Amino acid sequence: MHAENTKECSDVTRDQGKRASAIYRVRAMARYVACLAGKPEDQWPPPTL
Image (cartoon, rainbow, N blue to C red; front, side, top):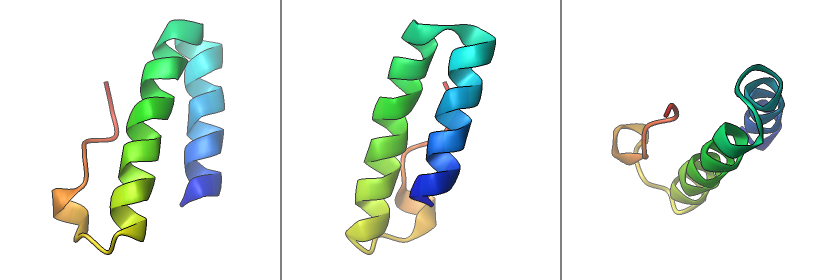
């Protein structure tokens, strides 16, 4: 999951700029933390802006 999010963050940077990437990275980390905490996927934050 972390590797997928890293690639997606790079894509966001290329397509939408550094600010959008920073926002995306915060959300990706929140999703990763929820995953590690064992929460069901339907309780994770949304992946998109």
